Length: 342
Image (cartoon, one colour):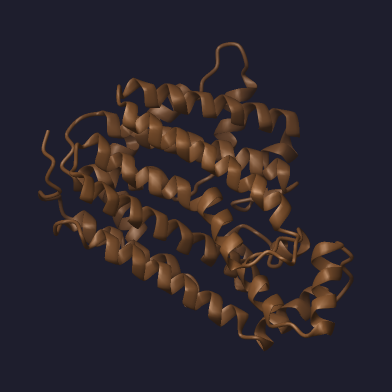
């Protein structure tokens, strides 16, 4: 097993132009194995609702970005075994479980342009199937025989849960500042990105400095990804995001654009945010007024600048690894994440 992150890869499909599409094309054989393993492990002989609920979300489309990061990191570090597929599947199960739980907590009715599982079935099914997928993910981790991998992904799972609980108290509190927001984002989003890339290096036996670089890349990419998602909630198109514009406002989530606007607010504006976010007293025209305040204080532009900064940090980290076509795809991916808000 080589610990050097070098080697060559096959040529890319010319049709694929976006970085995640190029990555998907390049990893198509490994991702096919991941999808097959996911379908096998989401089966249940005694509870047919489990594969029904899981398939609704797993087969909904999605870019499968997190498992691809694990496969890419492993290949970048010249891994030639089979356990990258187990780890990528584990990462996807963790992600799917958190989505099922999130939709219950947020009382969401739509994800990726489709009705949520809790809407089609019920909250109990979503929670319990999410628990089942978490358990399946740990089974896959154990099969690798790597205690370090188990440590990384179990810590990530705990951090995700911690971030979600923190968000429950912080999301509607105007005292929430950017440092608390970052702590939430590191928990609910970046923790799984960084674990996904880190375990790819670990399973390949890469040197510690390269594993750290992979972790740093995933951490920064995940933060940029979430900041962009929060920004798109106020300026994206529902056909592209699968969500309605202003959902975060209606759900009273204090995301980065609003945090920046609140920090610059005068007394009258602060009273508006207290009424709509803290007290939940929202009226006709409030979303439009919120958008006006975000624009007035340059909150959207400042949020975009932050996202670009984290994207640059991701690129700095990945460039510490030796040159490799997959490294270039990951570098380009960091650009693409923020290009969605260009």
